[in-house]
Image 1: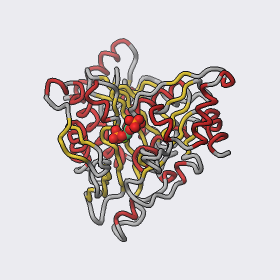
Image 2 (image 1 turned 135 degrees about the vertical axis):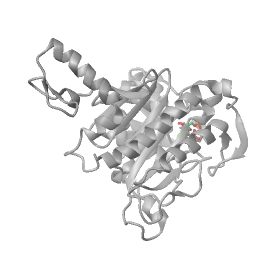
Image 3 (image 1 turned 30 degrees about the horizontal axis):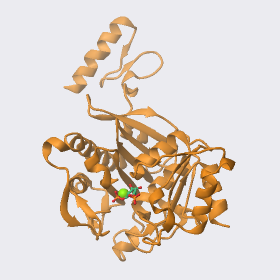
Image 4 (image 1 turned 180 degrees about the horizontal axis):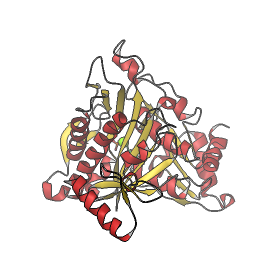
Length: 362
Ligand code: AHM
Ligand code: MG
């Protein structure tokens, strides 16, 4: 039906311009095949365009990617109607991190697990909400997908921006060894990372190491459509982003940086903190600046999770020209020891992260 539509479309164009009908719905216009030229660029099509440069840019991998985009479209529609569907508020349970679980956390998690559970090339799924990985295929399944299904859950009930973060690893040894050892890979091994921000518009950003690209969800056609290619993070930016409420619990180096950033000597910075990592990162990526979630006395290893929060955003930041560190080590080089490991995070514009490090490393 769709193919017939395209053929009819081609024939209309043919009446206005000389076109050679090459069969199979392809019409040669003298320069290129019309049916090879998409009228919109979806995430999957964009990813596949890196074929040749990226060994993972295969139709098989696109099947995995479409599982992520489908899940995020479903999550976006649930978020938009949350108040009408009675799915705001807490479930009364706590998750593996000891945090209060929101109804939308559960919905987002189940949506991702169910959308990805049927993709034949996935072996394991790792979610912030589940203590153990979901074993989709014990011995087969080339890829591992890790995700924070709904980041910024404390903002859900306030109608403030929230997001989904994802990371994809290749399974090192097919089917053998301890499954957890397959998951515990440093961020440098990521083959894809991204996030979806459910904001005033729903935006997806991804990288596979070949640029950072952004797509906007066009609700009228139900697709993430390319809106910005090769996004670069400004090298500097006069915004810092941190939970100032934890000021007295921060290490001395962080407090010295904050003293400096608040002083006249810094030339004047603005503070912006949404409390949803995806939203704070998205702003930092677009406008420049730095985001910090340091260790605190309450959380000596920091709050954010290495595998499905810090690593994917670090990959995006670095490909866009920024930096990500825990104050001592590059985030993506950290060797994870446990699946839900936490890390301090300093991420953002290259010059701003270096500035923080000059105080933290003193
Ligand atoms: P979550 O994944 O349970 O939502 O927790 C992570 C969130 C991040 O989005 C955000 O940067 C941080 O926690 C905010 O924490 P705090 O309220 O301590 O400032
Ligand atoms: Mg989170």
